Length: 42
Image (cartoon, rainbow, N blue to C red):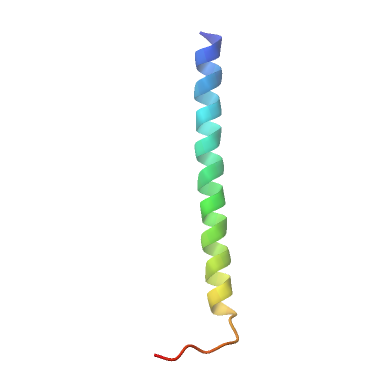
């Protein structure tokens, strides 16, 4: 029973870490777009 609980906690931690990582990447991409000094031509 303890092993199952440990596996569930590890999986939940992995999901939370993945969400935080993706949020950080999205924010970094947003800042890169906002501060890009090269103007894009359409």
